[in-house]
Length: 383
Image (cartoon, rainbow, N blue to C red; front, side, top):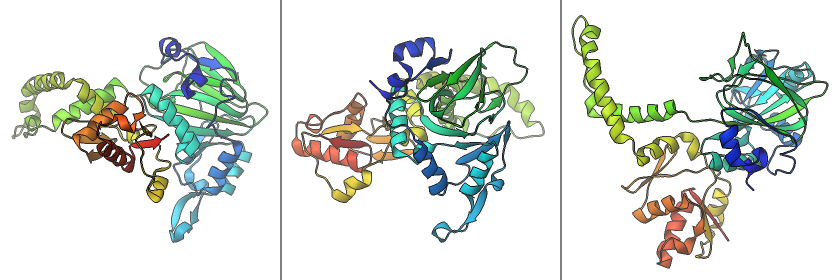
């Protein structure tokens, strides 16, 4: 059972009945899930890791507190930093009824990062994690909707979620929703409960008589606009669109009759480019897909552990290599030039792990390819 199925149940049913359509509440679903977050983790991150803004936000009753009210000058590492969060000030706001939001906290906690990458592998969309630490009787934000699908895990205490039966078709991040004429459902989340909220679904969140911590796993959903924008930008870099607009007193007037010509040219180029490799390159060429879990990479280099033919080799969690026929592998916005056999190995590993010996019938070649992929941080090996 994967982390995703532990949280949301049957994955196929979730995709067909809930994803982007309807909320899902699963009481106690996260109770036995490893790699979650603890109160001690949050305390260590907030008070002992020299957090800098905008990694922390503080909000109360629909108002985001200006960062200059909870940061202090710091000489950490002899650098004169002015944006380090002062834990005393942050906790003072918390005691005064404000909610503390820790953004992309998965980057500070490897076990939580591993959870995000595990879920990301199943969903095919980038996943990150925010933590909301709220005092009793708190309401951080007004009714709003998010641009991401979110999976909520209640970590400590309880929290009341009011979800409105409406979907905003083109939501912006944290978009305030006013004059909402829709029925709503209320969910009281307790420790271990899971709640899925579709992107664009308005919601209002409050605590009752006790403090609360919840984890938000944000599915940073790629849209058709993201895909087409990437493909169009590639096309527009070609010589066909590099010419200057007409010169003269009425540039717009001269250009207007030519727009149809270039629009048709763009449309034809887009149709020609709409193949699997182009889509693969645009979807998985995003920086987020290069942010695989790199834990153990330095240990591998330090100990220089030899690779055995019996070892299993696998892509690092959250790593999505985009391969091309010219011997290049791109991960996020980072490119590697590899031998053709290594490129083919990356393609095969997209379907799952395999033994090093299966890379090539020549043992030295198999070990060499595996070693190159491990050294570049694309893969891990183990028995």
